[in-house]
Amino acid sequence: MGIMSLFNYWRFIGNFFLNKISSILGIDTTIRPLNAQIELTLRCNARCKFCSIWTKAYQKSVTDPEMTTEQVKRIIDGLNKMHITVLSFTGGEPTLRSDLGELIDYAASKGMMTGIATNGYLLEDLVKKGALKNLENCMVSVDFPTAELHDYYRGIKVFDRVVKGMRAARKSGIKVLISTTVTKESLPYMEEMCKFATKNHAMIELLPCENIVREVLDEALEVQNIEKDYIPDLHQWAKEIRRLKQKYPNLTTDALTARIIENGGFGQFARFGLRERFFMWYVTYMPCHVAMAYLFIKYNGDVVFPCKLHPILSVSALKYPIEKIYHAPEVRKIQQQKDTFPFCRGCRLGCAISTSLPFYWSGLYGKYIVAFLKGNFFT
Image (cartoon, rainbow, N blue to C red; front, side, top):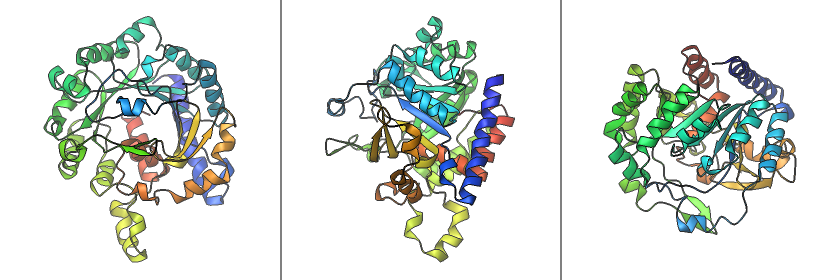
């Protein structure tokens, strides 16, 4: 971890304590999001079996143009004014944007920790061109330890390119995290994936496949038979996570995350009375804080709340200052509702869990402080 990364790490911890103090004192205007994500594009060069983003039905719904380079930079300026330390670029597939390197450089010049989430197809090419010289973290999708199975699930021949890309990234000083979507078929390969990550000097997260319903043009779009064909037995998955966590220090999926997912995910607390809540809170419950902890900016410049999958409020950050949007009364009302919305019931999304964990002492300690001390910190 470089000097700037170390500095930003402590800034991240500082934001946590500021939020805690602000909550105690009831000063909403000083609360800060801990992370931000900019969705650079909805285009994708993969054809994943468990994803609908590449389908004609979904792409047909994408009518707004992508933000220009200068517009994305304006968004980054706004995030910098809010003292956000962690910024990731996603898609779609963010490496399809020809200005990705320029945007990473710009965010890094503001002192931000930068990351991307990619399928890895173009990773080696970008590293060799020097486009990722200021990138700190790279999340790469790998679902199986063999090319045959991984390429089948991703719909393109990408496995060999991913391996080369990870090696190139590591040699360039970029921290690599393998993101594995665990399905029914890949459940028996979880330990093999940990070994694969260790061999490639990478960290790894193992999160179960989720039924992501995308609401487009008044239609709910989802992968056919995903519950039957892809989503694994969550108890088996959680049991294996707890076992593997004892053997592989590079596994970032922790026991708390496994417990939340195994016990039904978010949105459970609203069903119980005070007595039940008292006896269950320490076992199963942690409310979602994604609307407060995370800022998600869509490809067209809209900031959405409470989350990217259920944007009940969408405001253009190209028209209004992003800080004013975040502290608006309408947004604050959504943040206070946490995971009590009907669509929150049973949500098991890893991104929502990982961004909510730092809002709690146990989550901050287990996910960030311990990981930092072990040299396994990945934002």
